[in-house]
Every structure is written in structure tokens, then in C-alpha cells.
Length: 317
Image (cartoon, rainbow, N blue to C red; front, side, top):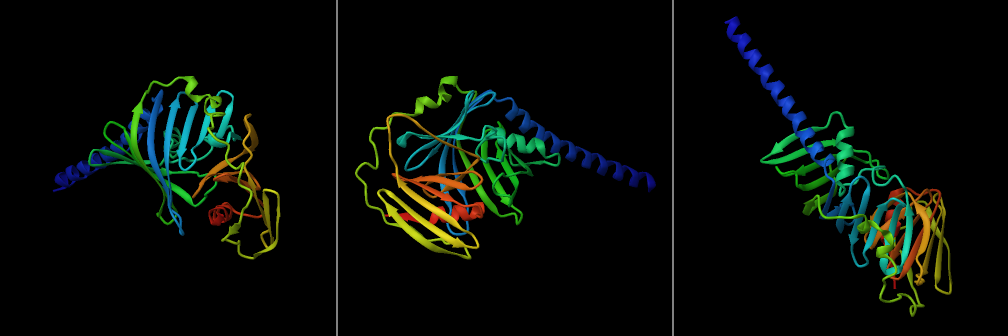
């Protein structure tokens, strides 16, 4: 009887050991594949799920090892983030505008649409787990999102050939907050450094928006709790709203002036996804574009959520 019990116990230990080894193998197989990519092109659809309204954007990525990126966010007006030997640039080609960006991007935060950031998060979590869902690999790990501390977990899915299928960012309640569904993926694609030259994507606008638009009605539907509109003024093509209270802030809306020369604007630390496009953030400012208008929100007292809520509530007519 003791001998039979011992054999059963030994079998259970072997089974547990095999499962643990499989778990490690699944994680390492995926990270080894991602680490070995010399270049790739992919397309995806990203959905940011918010309490009031979901925001979706189509994303195209080109990557060339070790650190060349071109990420195009497709919308009413395409916007790009390009990283090359000279820096990181955020570009709005139709307006001939160029931002400088935090030079540590993209590995300074978690990004659901970039395989290098996904790989970095998986490798950084020593407790990352792997499992199989049919023939798909499913990897779960902790993440560190730079601007949204509520996001703390990632679930990444790829097929048996390691083609990316889906990334999900979850919050502490295990609720899905960001979902990326990958569409096409071409590993080791034929990319050269010229694909990542920011000048290639500037100065090609066919028209100069804003030259004939002189009238604007600005409405900001969201007001931060404890704040009230203190003043509103307009001069030429610029409208200014000032809010005072427990959280003071200022909204400035100006008609875009498009010139033949590229306009380089201040350096920003991070990017958020708004209903009208990308919002660029630094310590006390969010800047974004809505059609032919440049909108800037200034404050020393707003959270990232406040900036996003204000920006999404602004209507122009």
C-alpha cells in the first residue's frame, strides 16, 4: 500500500514539474521569437474602452532592428510617430507640424500595439505565465503604464507560428481597458533606414487648411469638479477659456497656420488617444489637433484623465 501511495505521489510530482516546465517554455518561446525579429510590418485595430465612449484607431507599424520605428495612426488626419538615429518625432503631415518626443520612447512605457514593448513587459515579469488555448500561445504578465497607473496586467495572444493575434491591457478589477486586434503581420519585411526618415513624410500637403476659416464657436462640455468658467475671450483666430477653482486650467484654441517650412514644436513626454486623434502630454500641457485647429490645455493641477475628458468634450463650430 505504501509503495502504491509512493508511486502515485511521484507521478503527481512529475506531472506538476512538467506543467511548470511547459509554462516556462511557453513564455520563453514567445519572448525568444519576439527578440529575434530583425524587422516587421503589421496592421491592427486598437480600441480604448472608457466609461463614456470607446475610442478606436487603426495602427500601422514598421520596425527595423535595433530601434527604428514608424507608427501611423490612421484617422481623419493621419499622424505618425517616427524614431530614428536623430530622435523621436510626432508628425501631422497634413499640417506640416512636427513634435519632438521623449527619446526613450517606446520602451519607457507599456504599448499594446508594439511587439518590442510587449516583449519587454513579459521579460521584466519573473512571474509571467504562459498557457495554450488550442494552438495559440497566451502569455499573461504585469505591466507598467506611464500615464495610466490603473493598467497593471497584460494578456498577449499569438498563434502557433508566433503571429500576433491580440493584446489586452486590464486594470486592477480585471476589466479590459485597451484591446488591440492584430490584422496583418509580415516578419523580417524589406525595410531600409529611408523608411524611417521623418523628412520623407513632411512638406507634402496639397492644401493649406484654415486660411479661409475665421469664425469659431468653442464649447467645452466637461468641467473639472470644483472649477468654473472664469473668463472667455477671443482675438483674431484665437479663443481662450480660463477656469478657476480647486483645479484651475486654461484652454486655448487657435486656427492652424500652415507654412511651407516644417514647424518644430515643444518636446512632449507621452501620447494619449482622443476621439479626434493623438493628444500630446508633458508635465503641465496637453496639445492636440481638431480639424484645422490647434488646441492646448494648460494646468498644474489636472490628472491625465482630466485632460482626456476635457479634450474629448471640446466641440468646434
